[in-house]
Length: 221
Image 1: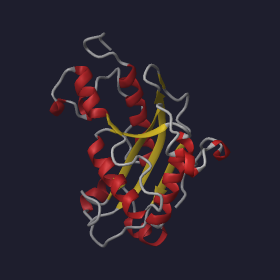
Image 2 (image 1 turned 30 degrees about the horizontal axis):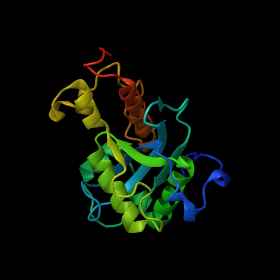
Image 3 (image 1 turned 180 degrees about the horizontal axis):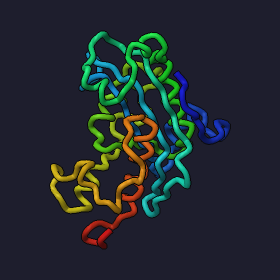
Image 4 (image 1 turned 45 degrees about the vertical axis):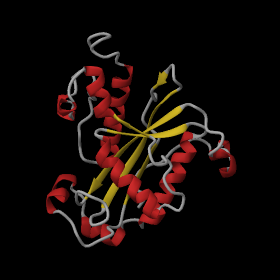
């Protein structure tokens, strides 16, 4: 279901598929991701919605954040099983019964998502960003491999965990690096709404703030 604006680079600037894999540059193209699900793991449970947001680039020397978080991709999906956790639905507020009737088929959604990532990244190397990475990556990778006719645009390991980066830069144990512990100066001013687009943009802002921060050994934020 196409329920949000999707924008990106001119597809005509994209390399042919036969050349894209072999001629990707060394520039990382970061994409912030957020998923909303009806349970803890993919397969027995379903991903109900997800969003991808362009979050910046890094060439090994300079990080560049977007001027605005306008390039987004959003889908609401048809559930793939009858199992669901009512508590999960209470958190994300999605109408699962409606999605059973109106949600987009996962094959179409994940194929379109893979094509969108390839288009917006251009010659850059797409890197999935999340906070924490483990949950969103598990769902998206499984869905890309299971349903996308193009596989995963992030291959099997092109990803960046904001939680780990925060722990390293703040010189704290990983257990103390949760979202609730993020420093106020690194946080986004946006509310965490459990809408996938809103939360992916919020996360992208935190990612950019953290990437530019020199850490406790450099300066106090």
